[in-house]
Amino acid sequence: MKEDLKNYFSDLIKDIKSIKKDTIFELIKKRGKLLTILVLVILMFLGFGIGRINTSKEHLLSKLEIALKNENPSKLSSIVKFNSKRVSKKDLQPLINYYSKDSSRVDSIINKLKTVGETEDLKLVEENRVFGTKYYIDIKPYSLKIDSEFKNSRFTVDDKNYINTGSKIDKLIPGVYTVKGILESGFGYIEASKEIVLMKDEEIDMEFDAVMLNISSAFYDAEVFANGQSTGILVKDAKNIGPFPTTGEVKLHIEKEFPWGRVKGEEVQVKDIPNLTLNLSMENETLKSEINTVVDEFYRSVFLALNNEDKSVIKGGTENAINKIYDVLEKKYFILKNKYNINDIRIVEDKNQYRYENGVYSATIVVSVDYTVSKSFLGLNKEESNKLFFTKMLYNGKEWKAEDVENFSL
Image (cartoon, rainbow, N blue to C red; front, side, top):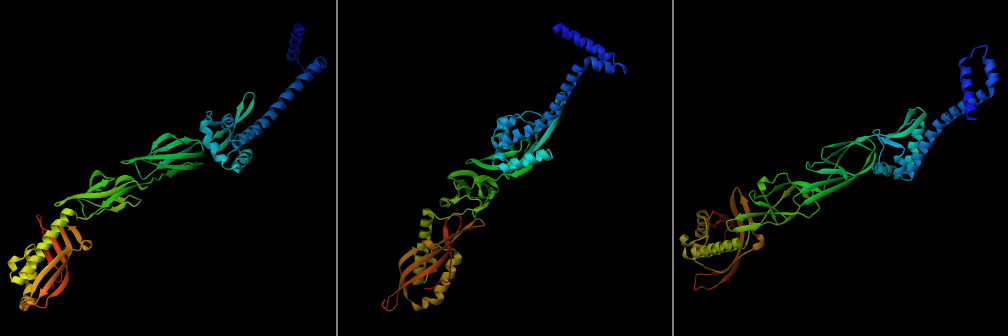
């Protein structure tokens, strides 16, 4: 049987090669049945091929629709290419996430691919092969540039692709990504996170809960402390320092060494304001004691000078202050010959003001003096009085002295 078929086709080929105009009808008559079968087979294959082309395109788009709506990266991976290569299921997740948020997006791209063959992120590609045409979906690549005001910040895109601020990642698959940033500070790492939609080349700015600080103070040579630890920075040098987190965990204060000891200022919480003023009160227990001693000596000696009519007994004041007060005593009180006895001298603490200007320490001290005025005649007609004296004081590098008393009178 096999030998008969072989001989039959051998004779057929010889007949085809010897075809002439006057023998064609004879060939059809002789081999009519077989030729009819061959023609039918050829037509069948042509029809199958044409149908397969249409069926392949529709089938592909159907698989794409199902893969996206069912959030199936495995099925999607079998019909797409990126940079002319197959794509892993994991790398397709951003694209899956984008379309899973709104199924109408899937309907829209399927319609566009059917009509124009292209969307903003996908393209229907026709590939001609020996045995027909094949279709696949080509994914368009996009780039992402990440900026930040903090130049030492670093970023990841979906926990990979580590880049520095100002850098760009090329050839990313379109979709939804999570960009994470990390910023190193002296107080640990400051983190930021943002979800982005990448459907074109994008440039984003990442914001951190952080701030660079400019610190000012009347005490330019004071040292800056953060959370109780020295930064090693003086106020005068504290320009654009940081970054500091602005979520409230950092508190700053300044400290300064005074002639009467080291003084710490109040803590200030760091927030999102870049200009921060830090101050401190110059007062400590040692200063209070020194001021109290000088004030007590000064006012007791003034009253003694008034009773004795002797300027030389006034202590604790500058020459200017002594002359000014004694001049008032001479003009207003010597003639009365009254006696003035101090009962109590105290400083009104909450009204004191200290200043540090141009390297000079000064203070305004409010002093309350209780005293008794006795008429000179037999000491009769005693009168109790109280006066508040606004006393200006200066530090001369060694000690405090009274510089002036505003509107001194008794």
